Length: 112
Image 1: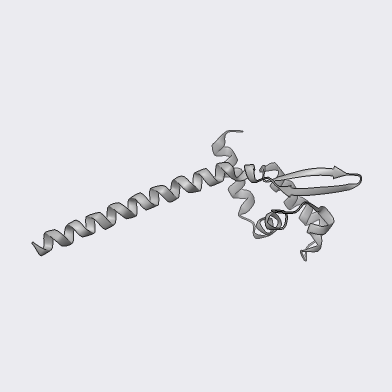
Image 2: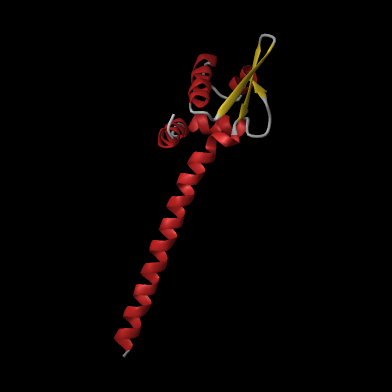
């Protein structure tokens, strides 16, 4: 999958609030699907679908331990998204800096 496609997939996955909440739950701990499901007032099937979307987006890993499925966040899955956001933030700061400089220059010319 191309880098842009990975970023798109991550953005789509994170657009849903429950998926972001799931990602927060497993950010530091590996949790079983049942433990994740218990944190929400929706069906286990719905949580399973959210887990699948997060896995397909590369944001979660799944490990089987007997009959249990354990999930953990994949920080490297967010790397492309982080780079995308960092570049946008850098561009926004550059635009802001140019606007402030233009405003200062305009104020200096008006004062002269």
